[in-house]
Each structure stands twice: as structure tokens, then as C-alpha cells.
Length: 290
Image (cartoon, rainbow, N blue to C red; front, side, top):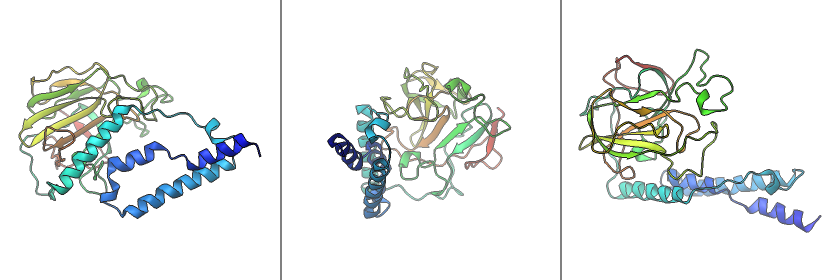
């Protein structure tokens, strides 16, 4: 066997894919699951990949596409890790019984018309991201057709998705305290742009009161119509749905948290006054008739 092939096989066997460890840190699994199982999973995954590449006709490095990570993503992930760790040990999130929970602000859906709840819910089982405290009660919304597809044609472009460019409206009265816009929309739906400088993409945060802050993300590039410090009313146009940041397809990400700090905040349940029973879980179509 040629030396170059041996080196290539060894490299494939021992090369850890950064994003796997990267996401273990983000989700902070060591605090929620026995750490030894995480290590076993990583080791087994690497061993499997190494063996798989040995039996391929070409060395693994010739078959892989390079994955680049923007340095700021590691900074953001570290900040998120620190925030979750501090809340875990210093000020742990309190258990919330959503059946009896009431919001101080009156919330409506952050869009007009019918949308599908693609991700999110009220329990650990159907939560958007239970172990990421601020997104514990987050939702991802997309538009679906009668065939339960969120796109037309071949879904090869962001413009093929029904919700791309759709209006995003204010969920409750408040004041805009943070706006980030100008990031490009990722033009490869179905995959994640790891070279984006902010996994939140184009986003904004609205303060409703001292304990409720709305966070809405993945706006279309240069589409946000409000400014920091601006007072906004429920139903007011905020911008347009896009595919910026870490987004596999155009959608609206929406959650409410108890702090103005994205990394320090803890999510709270959202009871939508515009819905009959108020509560939402994934897998249903909802409509904002206002």
C-alpha cells in the first residue's frame, strides 16, 4: 500500500469533525446526560467513519467537501455555553406549569395568514431546544401547501420557498431594543451556512416589559423596517421572512425570554391571545386572522 494512502486512511480515522463537538458544547449535553455516553458516541462515530473511509475507493480527504467555520460562531457558542452554565448553577430556571402560566403581554402570531408550526412546543419532548434555555419555548414557522411541502418547483433556491419574503409582524406592543440586519440569505436550502458570522442571522428583539422580550430571527437581508429605540404596536410590519444565519430553509424563528440578554435569558411559554385555546405545539397549521 502506498504511503500516501496509509496517511490518508489514518487521517480519516482520527479526524474529528469539529461541528459534532461544537454542537455538544452548544446543547450542553454533559449537564443533562451522563458524560461518558457522549464520549462513547463521539469515539464510536469517529471509528465508524474511519472504517467506512478505509473501504472506499478513494481516500476520504478527496471525497469530502471542506467545511469552514466563521470564528465568531465559536465565540457565540462559548458565550451561549457560559450563559447556560451560569443560569444552571447561579440562577437555575424554575419549573413552569404552562397550563396555569399567564403572560403579562398579550401575544399574537408574528405573521399573517396560515403557517405551519414546524418546530417547537411546550414540553421537553417536543421543545425546540429544551437544553438551550432561551429557546426552550421557541417556535419555527413555515408555509405549507396542500401537499405538505414548504416549497414549489425543486427547492433549489430560497425563492422557491413559500414563506421567503412573507411579512413578519409585531407579536405584542413594545420597544425595539436590538436590531441586526444586512446579513445575506443563504442560497443553499437544505444545508447550513457555517461561514455566517452570526447564527441568528438578521434578527431583532422587542422589550414588552421587564420579564418578556420577544426575539425574532432569520429575517431576509436588509428587510427589517424598524429601528432600535422605536416603539412598535402589535401587528405592525417588522420585516420579511428570510434565510439568514443558521437556517436550513426560510422560516420565522420566534421565542420570548425573560431577559434582554440573548445568552443569559430563559424562555417562557407563549399563550397566543389570537388562538382559541392559546397554546401551540408543533405539527399543526395556525392562522392569524388579524
